[in-house]
Image (cartoon, rainbow, N blue to C red; front, side, top):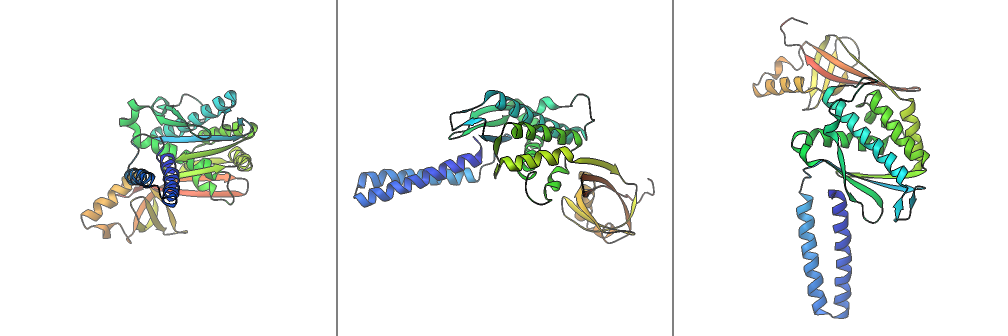
Length: 313
């Protein structure tokens, strides 16, 4: 079961046990008091153990509400089939983009077989499904698939929200993944559904109004990518995943770092040679991704190379 859902269930059971203990104390029932206290102790121990546990497999739970759902009895089979198929496509496309780079507008999707999800449980108390990565692929692609699901879950949660922060989540996709987002939200929107997604520590409900807004944004959004040549300037700050670069001409650039530059900076730090890279003239290359949606245009920079001082391009 999804860790977050299990925690919620245990907390509900713990609250009920404490209520029953209070009732037993009020009634002067020593046997009941002993039983409920033992149950409380066991639940508290299980909660403590689960809080520090890490899921070994990529997992996500999806719940449906609205017109396709009849109470907690069931969901329209045709709607559920389309929704789950489009969700699987989303995960597969993003996983493939992470593994093989931006996908072409057409053609087969590489490594999508390694992103297969299985329905392993039916969510209790509502209409939904628990999905996990196939066990035989977990050793090879556990981290990558979990990251892909996390990114998709974050986008689904935020794409229909207020403000412009949604652009920050969609920047990590390409046009083919965005098209899958549109397909997913179209299924939900046309079905008159609401949606809830639980992944990691995230538990987010998406209303039908937010679904309609997300569908429109996915439909109108375009993502372009280009790579710069060498740009002269100085690295003026960095963490293990981000950078700040002050070019000789223009405004300061910030964003993510590819593994290559991150390893170079880490190595320089271990050798006490950061002064050769920080606050000193150097050259760097960047990948620039532009997210455009009507009047909204945002550019995101990724540091992909730092000049090795060899003098070659």
